[in-house]
Image (cartoon, rainbow, N blue to C red):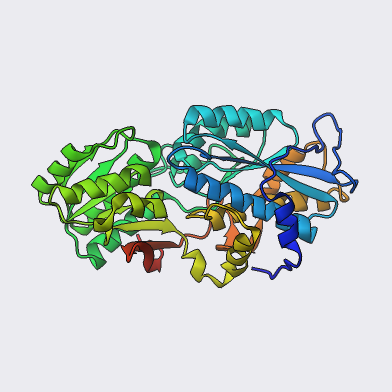
Length: 411
């Protein structure tokens, strides 16, 4: 990542790192808002994520990381004459709330790009709203393949929404990558597969299962759980009875942690494996001491180990955010920076001003965005998917997630 000067940024961040003020920008009527005292155009970057509820740890990390990107761009004057502001809306991990938030962002002509959401099921409810308005959306976390490649992605890929992009890789890669590790490296041959019936969880479990069977593994049982409950004793007993030597769970950490704990309590001393949805410090707290040895895959390489991420990690700490950047911090920063780069392209191509059709132009420019980001090279393929396909397997060891293997899926 190109080196950026952060001299005196601490003061700027402290002055308003979490200010979510919606400020003026050029709208359809040609009015151009100005940043007070500067005379420059102000562009709002929206954020949609679960800011409250069980998944708020991930959502707040997304919001903070976008905020850091905006403040950095302002400090460095990345786009001449443009000041970036952030407006964050809480979707509570609910598709209906996400759709309402998408409508709010579209109605606010100051918003030229949105980062989010966290959940693939929420993204499904937002895509058409954004696409109809030609408002670009970049998710740092969605992994369901259908979002970019259509519902028949496994046999016939088709891009449905040109305004949708993501910096995270997909479950078409993540599920099989986990299966290869479990079968080839961990030497587990009998799996019990569980999912939460939601878009993300069911899709991830499906791609894992297909690859595990292909490798020669046996699925000794399957089960769906209700994500609104925390009592998984019945399914834990089924896991023990089935004789599984590993459990694969498609879902998120609020359920995965208690599920792991109850499986061990039932007498099945086997690891629980999941995707990026369980890769959170909160999973470890919920799983308890017996969660040691549980595994998770997550998108990209460990941020802390990437030379390109050193500035992000250091400056996130300096900014004093109360919440950790969590699994998607680097991807959220890069998602916001992709919007910033797209705005820059549009402004530079229009004599230093935003055009009247700025949203459409920013969406068009996003397809050609390419830069060295926190998570590595950031660019998008013809479907809007990240070209960075790297993944990492993490294991719970000593009360923390430790990277055990990084690489790409070889199908």
